Length: 234
Ligand SMILES: [Fe+2]
Image (cartoon, rainbow, N blue to C red; front, side, top):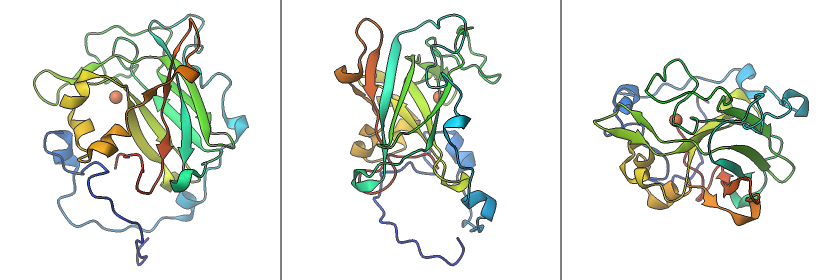
């Protein structure tokens, strides 16, 4: 807010740069003039508050949102949302969106030559529990081409939104998969200078949440602030 003092510790390189030239869109989006602080209004800092009644049944299982079954390798993505010092962030809305197994989004702006899946929307949501835990079932998203540069391909990823207690607290990030060769070449991933911070965006394969004969488990914890904070998009 205007006139407030920012006490947050800065950890250089652990959050994406606003201007990272290899990520071409950032050249247009990055501010070219000093930022102007706009005080939040009460509607932005007091809500909305979500509860279990707001969560549709099955919204956390992206393989069960249709009469049919989506194509792809089934995955379980779970983890905790935490403040620094591992304090749980309870009852917060988590939304995810992703491409299907062929790397195509169900969105009018994605018209690249890969098939849509009639049984997969790529969208899900859930609330964290008292320990800050969440869990989704989905299919592993495919890599997809984008026109950032010649022969540019995004590594497989899932977009995450963590809402928090109000519109003004919403945070957005992307989760990546371990062992994906495309990460090295991805300007969005590389817009975070610090290698350890980038590594915090890569989920860990997890036997404990792998369901025998059904789905591979991946663990992705989200830390909202502090030295081990998850990088978030500006
Ligand atoms: Fe994406």
